[in-house]
Image (tube, rainbow, N blue to C red; front, side, top):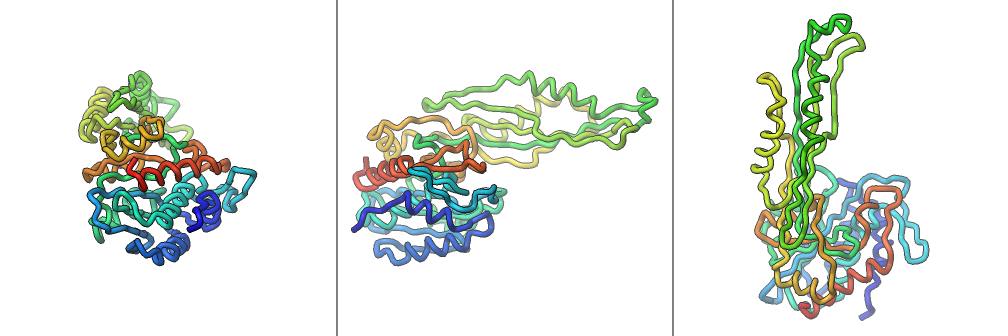
Length: 356
């Protein structure tokens, strides 16, 4: 069998447009490749594709990756410059998908049973997640002893992830003419105390399984004002909180409310409008620990949110491991290098073939 070329395959995948909700073409391509592999059983649920081995091994490793990208930013066509591939999704995460496809097509006798999960709509609201669509249809397709997601991590293991929460705060005031402001109450001016609280917030930096997480609390959007000569009677502030995995979302919500409540009056509103849970590092999992030790991989906390939380919430240890720089994702400068793709491929190939 010819050795796979995951870097060349990355270029092929980048050339297939797959903006969120428009993943059919890339899933058709993946399906056409995998349905003919004799050691795999494929299942397609909408624009989600699952390829599995069922050879009776004691453990199952799941490799997962989302097929969608954000909209193009003058980078829809792949461009190769030496060992660097530029283009939409090159890092996030078609390099990871190419690694998965190469492994699925080439390893017929894995040490573990394998599940390769290509899922849709990760780059949009979680309610649209392809993982949830698979779970509703057949949750057994997502069972595993370890899940590794090919998100861009520059070849390091990013353990667990932080949760995220969004609150909308509405402060009330009383309208008046700006020539007579003492007759009203300026709702926008009332933000002063809230912003002081946010500015004085001292971040937590819990260390969990050797990984240091870094919580954050930030104002991210403000909306208020009526006219140039009117004292405003309402202002809205959106606040984002990043939650380390040693806290539940309920605990984090209670903390934020206790922090903000001194600035609130009875008529004000403070609503949690969106949240996604954190995930534990899971570094004690023997498959993950073996892979890290064998290749002396760097391990760090995932400070953003990824779908490792989906698996953690279902009792499956999960981590992020893939080629590409996450800081370049969603930008015009998105790119991935041949050594990065090949290195991730070889690490996972070794794990799947030897268990190390």
